[in-house]
Image (cartoon, rainbow, N blue to C red; front, side):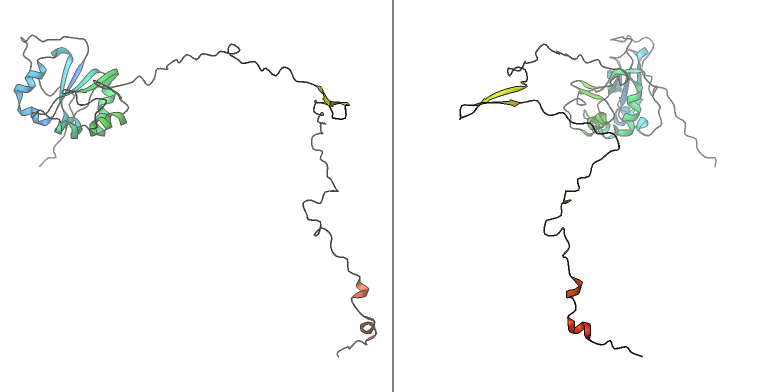
Length: 246
């Protein structure tokens, strides 16, 4: 038995429009409809959704096929990706299928400024559903009507108001004084020089050692106790004969 071959198609899953049907809301904006698996068996609901979109600018893909990797979406193509409601009117299926891998395929397919929306409006800014969290993690910006793809490459200019010298407060103390006069209690006046002494420059590589410094050693530990060697032995010890062992 020969092995089966799996092919990936990029063609819209359904062509439910007939050539003589008049479409409403024709627009140049391209739309992708993502349908959950349950809606495939309810063709009347699918036709009702598709009747509101222009056939020439609308694509339809099954959400489970996209999740399984059987469908590739064209890059930077869609202005709107609309997630359709399940056949029972909920979004149980689509919420589970809109995982991180699916958003990794949806985001590149959006144009800058394009939106991902749910048919029932539940995929929006205040949603606590798992698919809303995955939309945020994929880099989409939340809004009241869905999630928008930002322009990551555009630089945003932020005006800065620099008021140098306009609102600068001046000191009321006046200029610095070089000399002040102090009136002492004995009636004599004494002049004090307020200018700090100039720091003498030291040539590079030249240092000074203060030999008068104790280098942090306490006064009672810096000098060794002087011992007179003559006092170590008494006169009796000096006159004692030496015992030499053979």
